[in-house]
Image (cartoon, rainbow, N blue to C red; front, side, top):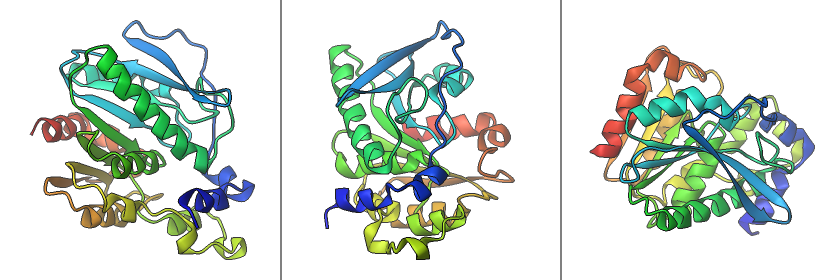
Length: 261
């Protein structure tokens, strides 16, 4: 069975209603330091992204956010990335922010490929010579690891925040009775398996008391990574949604120092 067929097994309402909670932009004005970009992926689908750009020679972080978030939520955070000398690009999923369509697992992966290819060309066209890192938070870890495993020679590094290693245990933790769905491990994607195919620099960030995706997932991703240069950074006292708040400057220092080193 192809991976696409396996992913389609997951695109059913009882799973999608748990995994995706899309919402649109507020309609507030875009900050002067941010730029919106839409990417056409075919079949009338446009994926919205928001760019926080600084020096073209500095690193670029292509970021896939968590569920329930949209690119607009990152305006304050984007300005911090810029102050740390990093270009920060946030990607919305279908149905989120400025993106149209309906979210799904299969389309989440296919859109990620289109987004990466777009920004690889965008960097060339705009002479932005800084390295390109892929980052995913929570749900976005699936998109980020998919790209790292698929294009190891086209990206410069991988950053995973609050990422999950195993799909079925996550679905069960979210309250989905996988026994009634007749889904087996062989029918779902595995971030732990995919990350084993990427040997580039890899940074894992996780909260000590993550109540949604327990720290063991982060440890498993770290253990399965074959990277020579890899690091796991645990933010003490943090849960799934308080890493940045409790980490503060340390959170950004860890990211920038790892990229620069």
